[in-house]
Every structure is written in C-alpha cells, then in structure tokens.
Length: 82
Image: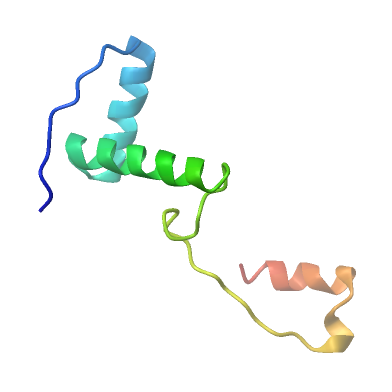
C-alpha cells in the first residue's frame, strides 16, 4: 500500500452534501472515494478532458447485424435489446 498523507479543505455545505451522498452510494470509504475522484480528475486532465474507458468502469459492446437490416429505420428494433 502506498504511503498516505491527510488532505483537508473547507468546502461549501452544498458541495459537501453532494460529495457525502455520492460517496455513500458508491460504498467506498471517504479516503477511497476522494482518492478515486482526484485520480480520475488528473487522468482526465492529462487526456485533454476526455474520460478514459479504464477509469469510467465501462466495457465495449459490439455486435453484427445483417446488411439488409442496417437501415436507420431497422435499427430501432435492435435498440430494445440494449
């Protein structure tokens, strides 16, 4: 485990409430949640503002459809699967 150091800051009450609510929903400790937020922020900043797939907990999903069903009007039936 890496060495740690305390970080403390006064923030507006509304922001504090928002952070606390979101942290509780995440199931993380305050330290884990703030570490995750700051890590994602600096990674996004390094990537020119783009969120990377690795930090966004997302997966790529791809599928193939027959060529005769590739018209935009036909794609609506596939959206129901998503």
